[in-house]
Image 1: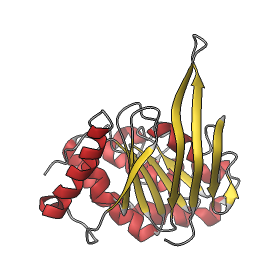
Image 2 (image 1 turned 90 degrees about the horizontal axis):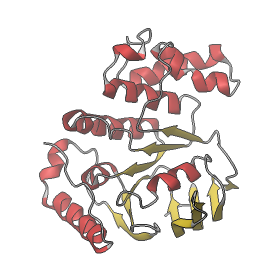
Image 3 (image 1 turned 45 degrees about the vertical axis):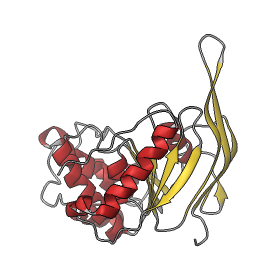
Length: 264
């Protein structure tokens, strides 16, 4: 593997409770993500997946261990990182283009210079012609496409995705997975995805990291040796099913099952 773009070493996180107790969410997590790699993190509910994502995004501190992004220790939000959450979190009074341009304003970038990039990203995510639409006029999948374009507009090296399609129906989610694979390849980004769905992780990823139940730790890293580009027909391949079952077995050994289904 080439030099890591994300390097996490001995990451642990403890939360204090209202009753004065201490709950350990993460235990000594070590992981690496190479430039251009698509890595997914799967695990049972409550295992600390979103805690990992929030730490990588620079949104959560108070942990032990180290997080290095692009060769620099991470101490807060970074321009090298774009983030997409399960809720698109679009501003309802701003049109699609204005929502995509929001990081440009926050970062104080040149609006005139960045607008062509925002428009190009909307074409990339299949939303050319929707620039003037308001979020309320879009489907859930379309709103998530806007969120992906917004996360990419300032040209980060890394795209973090926290269950971005978890609220979508199964058929729309499958379609968005195909689109995400295309967008990630065309944009040339390093992607780190948090998901409950084993099949989704296998379909999208170069590697799948498997977490235990709380306190979350990495129990295995599974390489996904399936050809790219991948269409939905690949879920019928024996190698796909075998990989899904392997990851499911690891999760069940950890004491908690995870979602397996991918509609087809």
